[in-house]
Amino acid sequence: MSDTNEFQRDIDYSEFDFFNVEIGEDGVTVITMNDPDKLNAVGPHNHWQIEDIWLKLARDERVKVIVLTGAGKAFCAGGDIKMMADRAQTEYGLKYALRVPINTLRIWDQILMTPQPIIAAVNGDAIGLGTSLFAFCDMSIVAEDAKLGDTHVRVGLVTGDGGSVMWPLLVGPQKAKEYLMRGKLLNGKKAEEIGLVNYAFPKDDVLAEALKIAREIAGQPMWAVRWSKAAVNKCIRDQVNLTGELSIAYEAMTMMTADYKAATTAFANKEKPVFKGY
Image 1 (cartoon, rainbow, N blue to C red):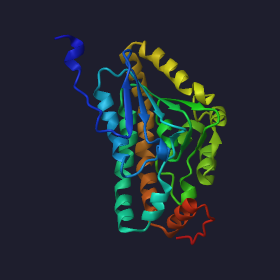
Image 2 (cartoon, rainbow, N blue to C red; image 1 turned 135 degrees about the horizontal axis):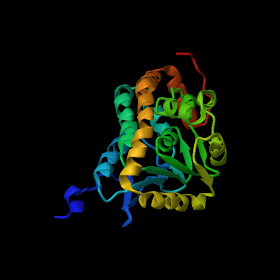
Image 3 (cartoon, rainbow, N blue to C red; image 1 turned 180 degrees about the vertical axis):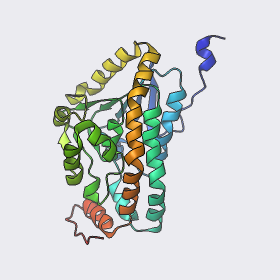
Image 4 (cartoon, one colour; image 1 turned 90 degrees about the horizontal axis):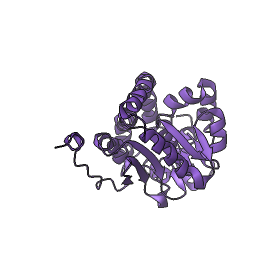
């Protein structure tokens, strides 16, 4: 038995219908969020997949570098606002709020702990959780005209889905607070200018450019690459431990407010919300 086969496990990705997984002969692996009709939005039906897939990728000896992208015109539209509005202040909504902290923190922990480098190829809009997904990756290549932003506050929520952790690290506290408290959107080109992402390219070039970098990294000494990632991510994991649990707990608390119900309902119906302050 060769050394390569000794460490390889039989990895099956068929349970992840939200993802399409393509493993190249060079070890560059493209995982595509595959619900284009819903702009690759995330909800209780597929949240577990974003938590769990990283564990399998981490154990797959065939995988050297991971490229994360989205099918269709969006990278990830974040949460399903219509569903959030329908379930706000219901028994189901309360049960979901109680599960949010641990489930969401698990996503960021798994991404940061995945030994292989992860490059986000942000082919289109990335909103809310979608922005956090690329921000927690090791590098981000985005479409110049993609709309990006953490808009939690617009639907009555605290930016608990990782925004309060990664935005200050990437763009500094003051810019982070401006974008997060205003729910402000920016395009890919502006995101490159302020340091939120690595590079912005025309939409049609995004995946090719991400793959170019991925192949370059796949050709480097594996453990030098993986341990370099691990060393840098140590400080990011410390920041998650410092603020992640608090921000996600605050987000869960805002899910129980009347203003959350008003904001999500108005957003889904394209109306102006009326907030009560509780």
